[in-house]
Length: 335
Ligand code: GLV
Ligand code: MG
Image (cartoon, rainbow, N blue to C red; front, side, top):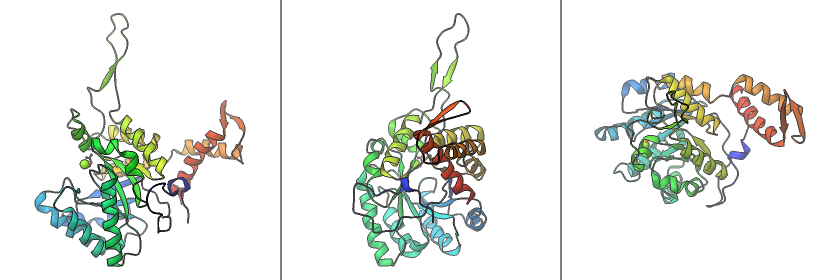
């Protein structure tokens, strides 16, 4: 069984984990489904075969008067299907909501053994993770859950971004973190109505060149937060993910946003529409040409030390490590 060493080193803070290290699995897309819709639940077996992770969403986008149906629908879809190697996650309601306590209690009690990860929205600090961690420990023991349920935080409040490092190390149950650009934009007072992606007005103006019209370059609104999240996650040995991209009519922009986050260290993204599954699969799997070159680096430096030239480019211990990241991911995609 493969393990991805760097992602599962022991955490510095919190009780030592009582659990075995989880095996490494691809998580290129976390595919969201609304479990209160019967027609959607009927499609689950078909979706399972196409995605790495399937997530029953109970939080935002589920109307208040459908919250209980969504919870019941999730428990039903968890128990009725065989997920094979596809992971099953749920996004519960936020800790400020009236639904969350029953979400956690009912789900762990009635389908805890089918569930891999709970995604917790609007995490403000480590205290939110501690609360869920303790509740899970009690409920797992009571319900006889044999496999620990992991926690995935959404980074989507200004306070959460401020506390990102403490959140990442808050519990040995921490699986990873996703950017939540829609709530984060609102929390920060950003002037946008978009879910992820760029904004046409967020630009830098190139220097003047005589009378020629000046070029404008659109910038990435999310660069700072993704970089901060990736550093916090990798330092804590957990996994960083991009989040939602809401403009389903613009697959090129979706791909560009996914690719930036992949290059910056994210392992996967959310897919909210079936059309985004293929985009995520291709973006978060390494390019064959890149893999070929990375394999040449590993072959040229069998013990990972020294310096060699390949196609005019200097390789050394550091590029060996870069190549190893790409080759390990490629091996996971192939296996
Ligand atoms: C996701 O939950 C977001 O707010 O972007
Ligand atoms: Mg949100």
